[in-house]
Length: 114
Length: 109
Image (cartoon, rainbow over all chains, first blue to last red):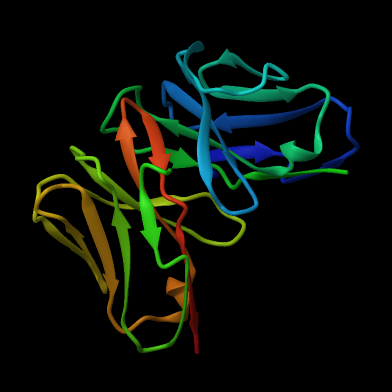
């Protein structure tokens, strides 16, 4: 069984479109995250939710809106896509928020904006 | 300026050779983590070093935390093609992982 899964694996879309990426974890964890990895492989945190509550919100354009319907799911909706949004987006989860908890990453969603 | 500076950016070696990658900062950390990311996958935690001067071994991988807790190194002995990947160091600040830019390691048979 996949611990942290993301759909879709690949997403190719035009500028200006709206798209969503879904993430699910079956580890029973309370905390989930979204990270963005750019073309230079630099990985940066975007958001974190703990038990459906937003706890980390980095400097991300408000075109990005995370939603957590329950603690096993964290989706990322992106409005008005721009070329610079092209990247690999990783979802992760950990048993709880705070330091010291191992984060388990999903396989990533490669978003290409044309 | 990034919090964590990794070097080298890229390393290509033959199977059986040794390699070392570095993670440096001007900041002091309570701990540092090392991850390996294989193509098409997310990062996987290899080790967390906590104590200054600490050395941890994971099979052929040796991790060291600097005495001043500002830097760390990862040494791979007798590298194998399966060691190919992006090696990331990171620091955990209340669940917010901050990463270096990574070292891409390619081990050719």
